[in-house]
Image (cartoon, rainbow over all chains, first blue to last red; front, side, top):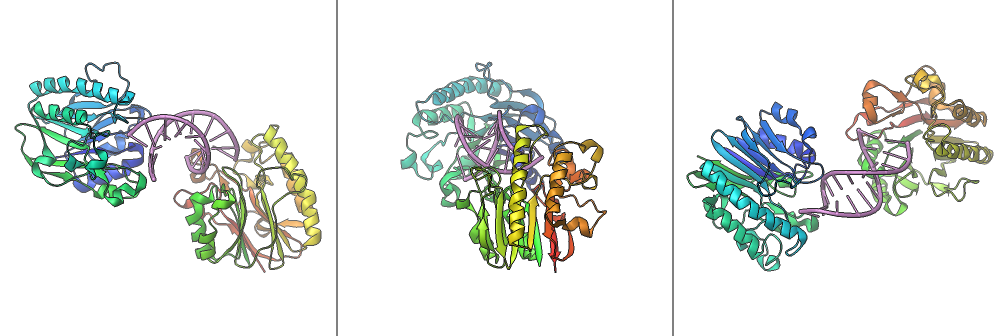
Length: 253
Length: 253
DNA sequence: GTCCTCGCGG
DNA sequence: CCGCGAGGAC
């Protein structure tokens, strides 16, 4: 069972890349973030023709999440309790072959102390109890997506430069640990304790070419799921007109 | 002697197409319209490396004309007398190997009766005496470019639908005849009296695929120039990310 | 730097 | 439908 998480930064622009990934790797489940596509313009036909069921929760310009799966997608949820009136489309949960898949696009937060940072904190505070509840109902669960958190210094190309900055602050890292404490494990890190495994490189300053990356996209798995291997598919970041994120994947037993 | 006229709809976007045309067809002279490039960003190096001298008169967002030539480009003029204070870059005249080349991007006019239509009429009224003067100085002359006039019903895919509309009104067609009356001939039409030879297809509604074209790009030649052949290079409109115009060409003796 | 939006021009 | 610019997000 192969699961991929990818922030595509516009599904409209990246559709061909996604179709190539589906064709080349034939994953069982793909979680997408930043589709930036309203539901009425979601490319369902192209993805179905590629052999995938689709679920999505999108909006115009920003955000937007989707799940693609070879098997039927059941019990779809798009609202985070406690943020019921939030117009931002950042969560999509669904059950696929008995596995609960919780796809998140956690707010970026812009800068520690900003209004957007406060929103990120509120969002994480709403996510934790939702996830505790989900785990009680669905013991086999993956939480995956763009967390906009680099959990530890090994996940940052230059920890000194990033210390305390957005995605690296103690408060954000503490939230990441609280999610793990619910009974999840950081699947790629568990398999590869010493690999950086960056998943995002800023478009600016040739960050990718210089290796200036962060590991902010994650796949967390609940206790009894067995992780065969996990990693990052940097090939997708090498292509023409790439997303600024690379796909992260896990192979479950 | 091979001469091409092409409205590229942004030289920045179409530079590779232009370089391909130069390589594949090795024309002697190319007149470009709608370069949409300010002079400081004109791609002189790439075009010189391809073996062409360049002359250009451009501006930011709109309009802009250029001439490429294998031979030196002399006596360059960019201002239309009578429209000296007009900021729109729509004319470029130059002498190449004894031939006067007058490259024009005649205003579109939007709709008959509009302010932009009045500007088109003023522009044509200024062009006629300028051209009469040019012909008196340079008997070997080509007037070429995007005229935004379909001279006759054969130049329109659906004459009934376009009757009296912009690019097809009697007044615009009369202006085209007045230019011919100065001692010019419509070189492609003279060689191919019955071919439509469309040069422009709206980007909208799949106009190209449906054959909904107009012949609005022209090459007019003075009396004693001998036209071996002339036509439209639709191949350039078949490519990826094409201009909405196809290049028009003449082969002079 | 690469997305999105919108309005403009065609 | 496609250019361009401007402004915002990341």
